[in-house]
Length: 483
Image (cartoon, rainbow, N blue to C red):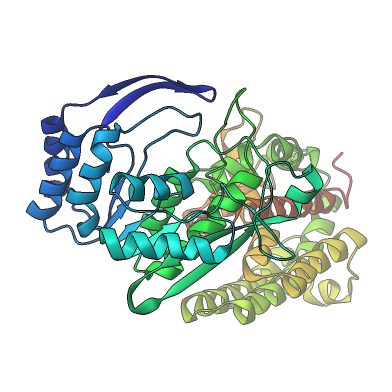
């Protein structure tokens, strides 16, 4: 939550105007947030005036806010004065004794000391950085002090300051050292490669915010600081290079956004352009349309249902493999139930084949056709070589597809809906029945529940498995002529 202390007119080239929010209004914002949402960590940025500093100090005391991170924003990246000189000493006297962590850069650290009548060392070494941090901690009172070393990069060879006149190659080999000092003489040094970049707008604010976020999650100060330093370094490295001045860093380098709303993956999947065409070809295949209007050659259907029985054998194997791949007893039981359901379905399948004059012995004696072998072994290969969810995605075209085919045919104007006029209408009814649609719902929910935990890159891999599986389903239709 935010309490706004000032509004600025700025872009990457500089700050051209500052409007300081009245201090009492800042206090009311803080009251509103604390009394409703609560506060784990207070992090300050641009405070703007001595009056705002007074209010903030009073609010910290009033609400007993115990973890306070102060980023002493005094001068912007572009050089604009953001805190009046007369307020700097006020900052020291009113806030620093209450501060858990103070995060000045080198110029800010020196300014804090000089405004309080103290001498700052010339920073030409890492030891001098440590001395600077220790002096602030001992004289001004913060529990921890992090002095950020980005303004003075060091040579990686001897850890001495790199002259400003150094070549680009020398600066490229330099390092930045951030020094954290704390209670009981604790010193932590975080070293990162120096980056020559204009994408440094708001790095101090971002660092202090990242530290605060880590502290709010229960990390100790050294751990929170180290993680935040790494976050900022990569943010600069992957920055989008916006604007003609000092642009922002990339705050989202480690954040992943799902390309769909949780619970709506299947809808997203079937609406993707790379899925739509192959899915339409599968659902509206001439073999399928022949089932709907009753014109599919009977011998083609008889050949299909024999191969479908052989497919079910491997479908059972795949679900048995899914039980092995599952990591919890609920999913193991679900796969076991599916295998049992397939066994019962195979018995029904045999009886269904008998109505077409096909004996069980004939089914058992029939060899798998190439499309059946290719599809089933693809599913099993995915199950063997990848994880449980990948196997579910390989199986999904069958589960989802037959339900979609039945629904499409049931609504299609060309479908003949009487068994006397269409031999295949009972087959359509079977896959449109409530029990099968419930199986589709349960299978879809299972995928939805697990896929929301995947990274975008993994989702793309799983979509490719689904597409390939759907193409295999098309091959299954094409084993026998549709006309």
